[in-house]
Image 1 (cartoon, rainbow, N blue to C red):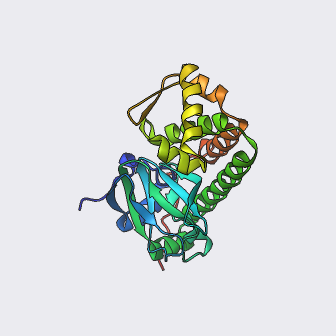
Image 2 (spheres, rainbow, N blue to C red):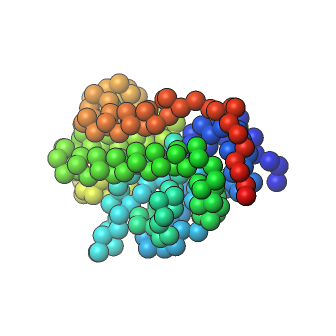
Image 3 (cartoon, rainbow, N blue to C red):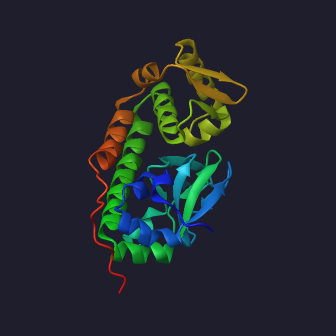
Length: 249
């Protein structure tokens, strides 16, 4: 397999690293395809690998005692599935499932732990991402408890659009209902309202965002709260091209 070049990397965490740290980590990264519906981690399972998303997006799901999943966060090319390894976790709290096909860079969990000890900028980015992801989880919980479904659906579609990078999403109303923890019939009503407002088009299991600004206006403040945290995570980052190579001893 040819060596990975940082300039071709689409994952924002890896792209933000100083070249010396990326080159230290690159031999432990394996490109893989992600299939729609694929489960990467199950709740309670040992985390053997982490996944730096390159394209597509993943749902992190809390699985309730009756087996019902409820989405608590989204992971796209801004992040990594399994980041809790950097915090000392060995098992996954959430189940993570690919909502679309895509690509990722797989890294063994022990390699990530070692790299986080040796490469300080990598460790800092992982910890900051873990913090921002927790903000997303907390804001999602508050949103689900206090905002009406139309606003929540608009927020979710914006988050999916941000991470997928495409305006047309292959999503059934059944799937959205599971993600938002509501009945399909209520999703149908909310999606119909957004379609009548001219901000989305829904047909044959595909939702197309036709008016991004209008969808932002239809969403609650929770979308901007989380999006702003992600902008702060990456907006002030500069690649440190003059960084020293990590000490491998």
